[in-house]
Length: 282
Image 1 (cartoon, rainbow, N blue to C red):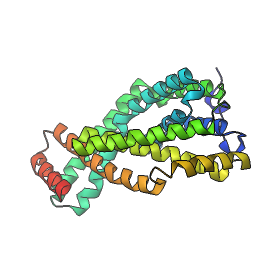
Image 2: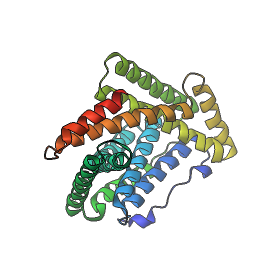
Image 3: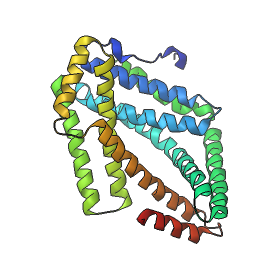
Image 4: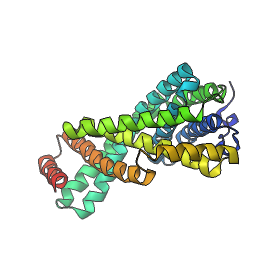
């Protein structure tokens, strides 16, 4: 097996067709996952960045499914499991960072500082346990490398521009359904699904925007055509980004409430839960 250093980042700017450009972009995200997980000086930030690359890969490879359905499904499932493996670390880090902002600018400062210390300890203990089980994230990086080699060996040249457009429209339809469900039956789970659908469509459009800007002339034209047709019926990247940020802030508070409930030994837990409820409804 070749070492990970023998897998260079792919560059979509040299692709001669849209399918290959999307394939190269997806491969670049796999490379980034591996690179971030090798960075040990700032492991929590590295996990956060790796998770973002996981989401970009899964969003873009979904546009390519018709070119190689079985391969794409298998690759997506493996990288989804990698993301899930990292998700508890990432959620613990986000909760810690959320409280870090509150401890200086909210009432009950001493209570927020105590919670921050407890969450930081929980986060670091979780990281230590995961690294003890998988030193240097080597096992996760091997999984990512295997997926990269499989995806790199596939042919996506048959992927038609119209097929990419249809995949984008299907993604937008899933987002709209998730929004309807979240509005009709308010709750954290449905709102979180809505946020994921918003984020996926945004990442797909961002990828096409990058190809439309940096690809070879013929590929730029194809990406621009897909974008122009798509944006006639769906929100822009800027609109989606603002919506995702708003839903993300709500989700951060949901996760923080869950973290508070786990810390039942914290003397001021009930006070902070009430403060979070007031913050959510204000």
